[in-house]
Image (cartoon, rainbow, N blue to C red; front, side, top):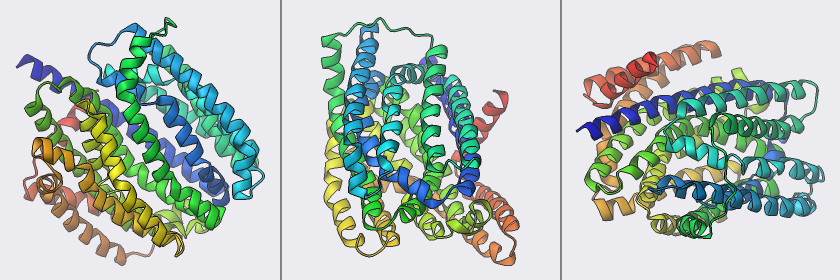
Length: 482
């Protein structure tokens, strides 16, 4: 019983500080993003978007799933940590070298000469971030999200202020490039100070073999998923224009800011917690079930609300030059409805050591994703996003397949568990949507939209006797005490 209480206490504390971390970062990101969006133009964001797939694939190779392997492993040694650090830094040098010499070919592909220097500068992040992985994983294993919150907020705020200053001076896309580099530098510096771990610089072949045995499957899945997730950016940048890609990336970032926060909070705590329960499957599934419902409790109303207020939000905060983002953002919100649930299902597989199943799930989704792109790319950017909405809805059942097969808790049972939450969201969203028609002022629409959604969602959850409301009260009380 004491072990259960201790784990619940650690999980609650982890959720609270993970929430503080993610929420604080997103608030700062939103403020900085709004200011930068007003100072910069869509093309600037499009140029960064063109490079996303190259940076993401390089990053996937550098981590190689080794960080996840460290968390999943029960008995970690100093040799494990040092081996991962040395391996990551060595691989980062290799990939930065490849990226450096590939830069002219990348700019030639997009017929955008300025991408050569941008690629070489932004690629420096690969070297810097490789030094942060082990330190971050150690804090995650300890569920020390309080320290992570302080580090992340500090680095985001400092680099954001610097970027705003550069954008104000007219540096354009370089404000975004140097912001990323400075953020990584500050983040790594603070992680090394606060993690209080110094590597022994010992490379153990045995540690590498064990960790890479698990991580290699995640690497394959990560490379594959990264390519599919970023192929839209490549095709939009190639077929359409930098400004079109800018609208798309802005919509994606805003939608991810909401769904990604919820997913990040729950997932960051879920993996180390579930990994400690991997020998007790019944308790593990029960804990996972509660996390699924908690994730849906927050994400569904947030995504519906963002879709409803997208118009006044974009016009008021970002300005008229971003109007083309509105329909893309509204659609992207529905593409992100089931995202946290899908991510949690895949996290469950990793926490049980079944990275092979993780890979199989990702491989199974490829034909559907490619088919959607083949159909929608020639039509329009909006059609691409509509295809994405359809694909993410269908692939949710791919992601939940093994939970159903191995633990009798598949996609339909998970949806049944959150059916009351979906109903409460729809009821509150309907009232909110029609209430906005009563006002013309954008500020009033945002204020009324948020307030109406909040009030009627909690009224609906109370009337439907949704238990997660009590869990939220406990979390809020815990947050206030912190």
